[in-house]
Structures are given as C-alpha cells and as structure tokens.
Image (tube, rainbow, N blue to C red):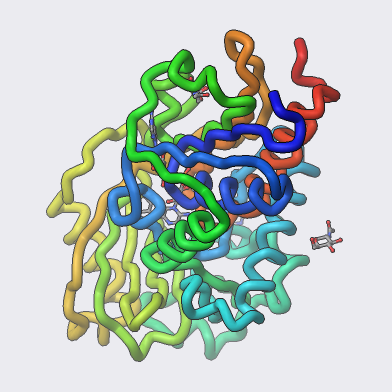
Length: 337
Ligand SMILES: Cc1cc2nc3c(=O)[nH]c(=O)nc-3n(C[C@H](O)[C@H](O)[C@H](O)COP(=O)(O)OP(=O)(O)OC[C@H]3O[C@@H](n4cnc5c(N)ncnc54)[C@H](O)[C@@H]3O)c2cc1C
Ligand SMILES: *[C@@H]1O[C@H](CO)[C@@H](O)[C@H](O)[C@H]1NC(C)=O
Ligand SMILES: *[C@@H]1O[C@H](CO)[C@@H](O)[C@H](O)[C@H]1NC(C)=O
Ligand SMILES: *[C@@H]1O[C@H](CO)[C@@H](O)[C@H](O)[C@H]1NC(C)=O
C-alpha cells in the first residue's frame, strides 16, 4: 500500500455509506475513495424513512457509552448543517414534536435525547387535547429531520466533487475487493446475505406520504402511529414495525390501519393528497455493528444494522467507523486478532 494515498472502497449508497464516504475523504485527504453499490437514491431504504431524529429507547451500540456518543455526535453534526447555508440543499429541517400515550407516561420519555435536545418536557392538560384521541400522557421535544430524497444527492455531489468514484455493482464476495487497502461495509440489510449475519433481521415498515404543507409539528401516538412533517410540504404517516417480514409490497391493510390512526389524531389529514406509499425493511440488529475485522487478509470496517434509526445516527456511526478505519490502516488497531 502507498501509505499516503490508500485505496478505499465503501460499499453501500444509503445514508450510512454516503456519509461514511464523505467523512473518510475529509479525514484522509489523499486517499482514493470508490463507492460501490447496487442501489441508489429512491431505491434505498434510506429514502423510505421519514428521517426524524428520535431513536427508539432500545437503540444501542456495543456499550451505553458508545450509543451515547453516536447520538450526541449525530445531533451536533445535523445542527451544524441546520445552522449553515447548506441546510436547504442538504434536506435538513428543524421542528418540534409531541408524543402521546394512553398507556404510560414513561413511553413518552427518551433517555437517549432528553439531555441533548434544547427542549424535552411533559405536556400540560391543554396540550393533551391538541389532537384527537383522548390522550392521557404526553411529552414535547425539539428535534429535526433529514430528507434523504435531497440528502443523498447532496452527499453524492460532494463526494464526486472531491474526486470520489461511484461504481454501480453488486458485491458478491471479498475476492473482488482485494485491490483495496481497506473496505467499509455499509450495506444495510444487504449484509445479511453478504456476511451470513443471522443477527440481522428485517423490521418491515410501511408509510404513506401526503401533501400537508400546513403541518408544523410531528405527532406520535400509541401503536407506532406517527405524523412527521417533511420537505416541500410532504409529510410521512406511519406506521408498522413487522419483525422478520420480507414483504416489500404495499399492504392495503397496513395502509388502512395507518390512515385510520393518523386521521383520528389529525382529521385535517383526510384532505391531504396521497403522494405515494413506500415499504422498507429496516436493517435491525442488536447491537448495531460498527467494528473492524480482517477478512481473508483484507481490512474491513463494518457499519451496518441501524434498524429504524439509521438516518439520524448515520453521522455518529460513520465517524466511529472512520476512526476505526484510520487506526486499521495505521496498523495499530486492536483488530488484528
Ligand atoms: C418505514 C421506515 C421509516 C423509517 N424512519 C426512520 C426515521 O424516522 N429516522 C431514522 O433515523 N431512520 C428511519 N428508518 C430507518 C432507516 O431507513 C435505516 O436505518 C437506514 O436507511 C439504513 O441506512 P443504510 O445506508 O444502512 O441502508 P440502505 O439505505 O438500505 O442502503 C444500503 C446500500 O447498500 C447497498 N448494498 C447492499 N448490499 C450490497 C451488495 N452486496 N453489493 C453492493 N451494494 C450493496 C444497497 O444497494 C444500498 O445502496 C426508517 C425505515 C423505514 C423502513
Ligand atoms: C457532544 O458532541 C460535541 C460535538 O462533537 C462535543 O463538543 C461534546 O463534548 C459532546 N458531548 C458529550 C457529552 O459527549
Ligand atoms: C409505567 O411504566 C413503568 C416502567 O415500566 C411502570 O413502573 C409503571 O407502573 C407504569 N405505569 C402505568 C400507569 O402503567
Ligand atoms: C459486510 O458485512 C456482512 C455482514 O457481516 C458480511 O456478510 C459481508 O461479507 C461483508 N462484506 C464486506 C465486503 O465486507
């Protein structure tokens, strides 16, 4: 290997792969970086997501400290973009959210972000009546979202402008990658087949995208009900979370259930035009895998299995993966076992 200009391959063009590719270019300015992926833009799971910054409380990395660092680093990364003139092109927008429950106050709290976002408080009686549904408990918090329909093209353009090369191909084995000094494995659910990783499980999701430019807050209710504002006035209504389901077709029963629950919360949505319906398989893995591995002499850093939180946490996990990659290239990593 030429120590000054290593050859690096990133596999995957979802938000995790593209963010990792951008960050490794920033860290190793002389590296030549190639991004290889089978699917791009609208065809990725990333483009199905609402992209809101709200981790499930079960989201985790290898340790609570690592999880905390991913979430914190991600939040600050998004805040930097939100404060910059890039915010619109990058598809990042800030807003506040209500989360309601009839079952239990504790489900409206979130230990992973309560100390991070500027506002996280319980609601008062009047706020419980803001939307339909006779809610008993609720919290209010500030957050943001990243719309991958804009963010992925934005990342890709930056990556290319710095000399990054994009290859449209499916990687079937490591042997084809032997010319690289290091490979970053950001294949999302694809890792299941590439790596026979049985810990990776599809968590099927379905959403309805509607035109609702008047929507200024996000709302969550019980049974995975959510209404999330979006770019260009297109909101995301959800949802379902079906464990070990591989069905990529829109299910009319899921659609009916989603609309019924969302219309009950906000009857005004009945007038909102349905723009499209999307299904995605969240790459669920406990914990999310960010770690180095030597695979048949090849240096690999894995970064996959973000489940339902890969948009919001792509930056933090990508920073972690890039740090591991730099150490591995220097040859001073713990990865040589
Ligand atoms: C309905 C729904 C709602 C969601 N809402 C949110 C949300 O509000 N907030 C949030 O943070 N997250 C959300 N998510 C989760 C989020 O979409 C995922 O965690 C995230 O997209 C994972 O990104 P990724 O880059 O790992 O995977 P993907 O976007 O799936 O990208 C994987 C890439 O790897 C490539 N690839 C895979 N295997 C190979 C191979 N062998 N060779 C070449 N290329 C390969 C693919 O072609 C693709 O380019 C949601 C998901 C769904 C389904
Ligand atoms: C969170 O991240 C910011 C920016 O990277 C950093 O300055 C800060 O120290 C971090 N806080 C914690 C608690 O890790
Ligand atoms: C809510 O959940 C907490 C923690 O799981 C539990 O201790 C409490 O009893 C629950 N409260 C209600 C009203 O169900
Ligand atoms: C990516 O990770 C998966 C899961 O461990 C593995 O099956 C696959 O071989 C890896 N691919 C590469 C190129 O590292």
